[in-house]
Every structure is written in structure tokens, then in C-alpha cells.
Image (cartoon, rainbow, N blue to C red; front, side):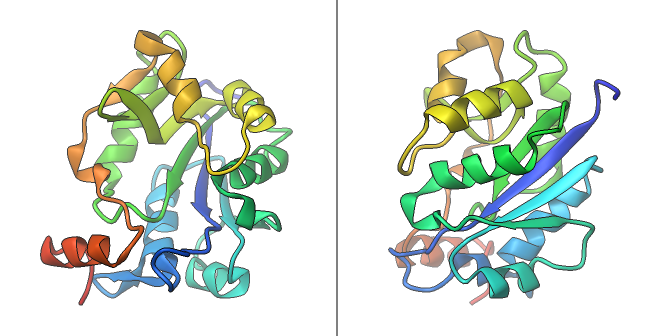
Length: 201
């Protein structure tokens, strides 16, 4: 396997409790956010492409269809983000490359962000690249399979990869993309995204 080989994981299992409707099915330019995330992930030409669904799994999987993606259902989605990372790690247990992890609730996400992470990881001591969220590091991110496996074994609740990535400090290449700080959790976020032209009315 070449060093450039990577898998891509789209996290789309959440129940959107605060929003009260599936944020994965909100649209930007007529395209659902889950379809958009899978499309952007597919454009990085991953060796494997995985869509993790959970709440409303069938509808979300159908909305994200149209690409050569594997779909895995996180039956424990109500336990939070950590359960989706565990599902991803399990599905990719035999994979040896790096893993690009992204969610579908950052409507400003573009292809150039993902490419920057792929390029940045090749320059980092850890082989990982992440998005700067203030002093912390988070997704979208490119991580080693070892980090994903270790993190998934330790995480619980609604915690993601941020703590592990942040702990690596300068060994992780960080992408400064303040536009990605807008993620969709509640109606105020939807309104802000609509006002910025990042979501359809």
C-alpha cells in the first residue's frame, strides 16, 4: 500500500436533537449536506469511503448515495460522537493507511480544505493533520489508523478526536479555516448559514 493511500469517513449518525430535524438533510445549492460531504470525500480518491449513519439511517444513507461508498449503521448513535468513531474504527479494522474524517454539519467545507489536510499530513511529524478550532484541533482531520483505533477505544459520550490531536501539539499540521467553525447544531446556526449563503432557505 502506498503512503498516499487513505480512507475517508463521513460521520452522519447524529440525531440532531437540538435542531429537531435531521441536519444531514439540510441543503446547500439543492444538495443535501450528507450527499455533499460524501461527494467531497469521494473527490479525494480514497481507497475506501465509509458513511456512518445512525438516527434515521435509511433516509440518510439514501440521501448520501450515488458514490462507491460503504455504509455502516452505528446502532449506538444516541451515545454520541464517540460511538460513530468506534463504528468507523471497527469497519476499517483491516485498513493500514491514513483516515480522513469529516462530518456533514460544516456547510462551508470545500474540496480545498480536504486537499490541504492531505498535503499537510505529509509534512507533519505525526502523519496527522487537523483543523484549528482556537487552541484545539479537530475535524475535518487526517489521522493515522493507529490514532483512530486508540482514540475509539478510549472515547465515550460526545467526545471526538480533538483531545488526542490537541495532545500531539506541534506534531500535527493544523489548517487555519475559521469558516469551518460554523457547524449546524440549532436553528440559530441554520439562520447564520442561510444568511451567509451556505444553506438554502
